[in-house]
Length: 273
Image 1 (cartoon, rainbow, N blue to C red):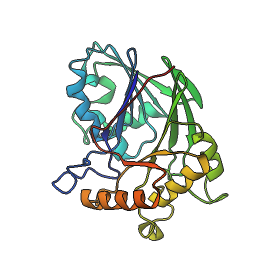
Image 2 (cartoon, rainbow, N blue to C red; image 1 turned 45 degrees about the horizontal axis):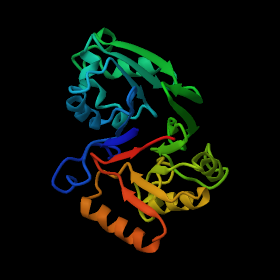
Image 3 (tube, rainbow, N blue to C red; image 1 turned 30 degrees about the vertical axis):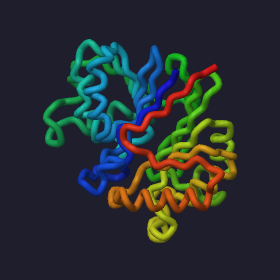
Image 4 (cartoon, helix red, strand yellow; image 1 turned 180 degrees about the vertical axis):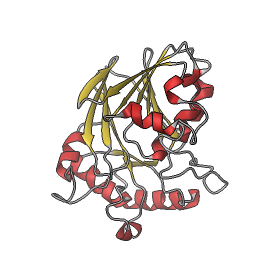
């Protein structure tokens, strides 16, 4: 069995408070695990909550994939307790210069602990286009996002889940990757998890910021014949009640689709055959 879990679902900046408590206010972080592998995608503030979970797991090795280096996807790493544990090995995958980027974040005057002197055994690796982490096959696609970002597809035996954060779905020839290319990448997956930070009205003044709308994601789902969609990377100003209203409205208009809003603590479990 493979389990996906959401630990952080917000974009841009953490947004704690009573108006965001239901879906959660931590920035992006998910985990993927089976009986032999524990993989984390992005190190937003949600990664701190994994600390409590890992106390019972007694893992000796952890994998981390960083989709890109914007702060809302890195800012929790200095507070991730395994990086201070000399008994744990950590493999961190990122685009080129991953070690330099993380070292820059964790040095004075920005942080009191020096990344280069952490006691855990950290190995840095460039993200290949396609690769295995233990028995999980990982495929990547280039997102449309300032400074770059990768979308990810995870395959365990015959089951596939796509996770695409920080991506602006654009018309052909406007971005690095076309809608058709994303649709081909997504096709055949069990679940599509995609950035939907903005509404169609909001994106009118935020074109080029590297995020999509709910309607954009639904259009891509139609092209890729995806039926199970989870919207994530919620705008930090989006209140829980607003997200619930958006979801209810989309469900009324699209009764043939299984639509969900990503929520901290939400789990997806499936068995490979």
